[in-house]
Every structure is written in structure tokens, then in C-alpha cells.
Amino acid sequence: MDLTTLITACALTVDPKIMHALIWHQSGGEPWSFSVSGQRHPQVLRSMGDAVSAARETHPDVAIRLGLAGLPGTPQSVSATMFAPCSNIAAAARQIAQLAELCKTSSRSKDDPIHCAVAAYHGSWERPDNGFADAVRATVAKDDAPDFEMPAEAGIETAAVVSSRQPAPHETTPAAPPSLPDDDDRARQSSLFPALAKPSDRSPNDHRGSDRAPSDEQKADAANSRLTVTQPPADALFVPRSVRRSASGRKDDIPKF
Image (tube, rainbow, N blue to C red; front, side):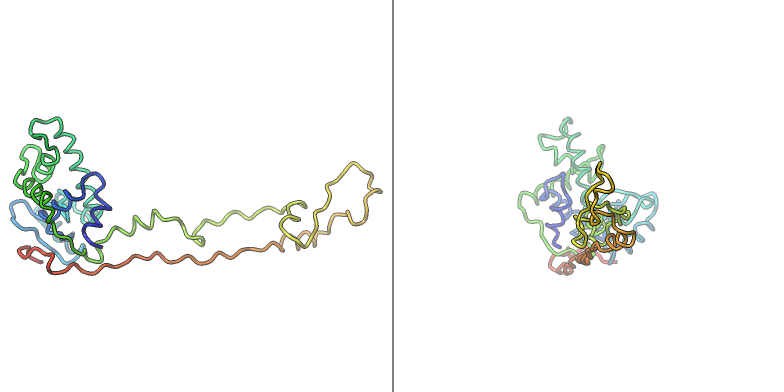
């Protein structure tokens, strides 16, 4: 999956172009990265597990930013969900959207609440990072944030996909066994026995022999004669694997760990 597709699917509250520019300037598009306050470049790890472990081992008193969009956190709060690309982007977009609403009522917005929100997101409300917001705005104006393939394991979280899909036929909860049908129902369900007339007010002597109720053996055979349709096996959930991002999409100055 390419970065643009991922952002479009997950950043539902902020313009995808703004999130794309923010991600490029924050992490260079590296999902398994985090930055530490006071350090110029983010640390880039080889897997989500490595990134979680390294971030948790950071000094507990420093502020860190996690994943593609630089989600703010502390070493004690780090979890795999915070690095998961779609969750990371969605959470960052929600925070920016909320800050934009605050900026609309603030004198600092200068008629551009998104610039105000990005500055507050990357810095703080008291100390906004206007330089970062300027860089994001310039990249949006030029529309030059690079696009590239995400690592195969950095796609939209499959757990959310699995939980939202309809259950396959063989996964449905079995229904309670039906009760033994009466004569009319049995006649509609099976062609082996005709429907029998319901009892009337006539004398027993007026009934013909063919109107006699079937024996218990016939009832059991009729109940067992209903056909059961075998449900076909459901196709397995297919999750495509994308290729690794090309070397041309990396920032050369981001160190690998």
C-alpha cells in the first residue's frame, strides 16, 4: 500500500494533503520511527516491535513523538497501537482537527486555523512550533511531498478489517433445532407425504381410511426426510502484501537503528 492511499483511508478529519506533508516533515514516511525532544532526527527501527521496545527504554522524563505522524506520548504510554500506521494517522488528525476549532476563536490563528493547529500539535498550545507549520504549509502549496510504498506490515490494520466484515456462512451461530412440524408444515417441506386434513366436527365413522393420522414411524421418517443444505466454505480473507518502499523515497539523513 502506498502512503497516499493509507492517508486517504485513515485521515478522515483533516485534508489528506496536509497530513501527507506533516508526515513527510515529521518522520520521512517511516512508520517504525520516533523522535525525542531535543534531537534533530527521528530514530528509525526495523520493525514495530523494535520501535515499541526502543521507545519504552527512552528516559521517562522526555517527551517523544511516535510513528508516521509524530503522535505525542511518553515512554510509559507507548503501545503498539500508537505505532500502527492507520491508528497513528487517525489519532493525529483528530488532535489537529480539535486544535483547529480552538484556533478559530484565538487571535493567533491569523485566518489560518490549520496552520495554527499544526504549530500547536507539533509544539504545544503555549509554545507553538510555527517553523514546522510553515514547512508543512509550503509543502502543501508545492504539492511535492513524495509518495512511496509502505512496508508490507504497515497497511491498514487487518484486525479492524476482520471485525467489520460479515461472518462467513460456516461462522454463523447454529440455530436451535426446529420443533417437529405439524401436518401442514410437513406437507410443504416434503413431497413424500401429502397434507392431511385437520380434524373436523364429523363423526369418526364418516372419516375415510385414508384420513387416518400416520403412524409414529411415518412422523419420524417425515421429519428426517427434510433436506439440509450444506453451506459452501467461505473464501479466506485475503490481505494483499505491498512491496517495501523504494530507497528513493527515504530521507538520506534519517539514521537507522
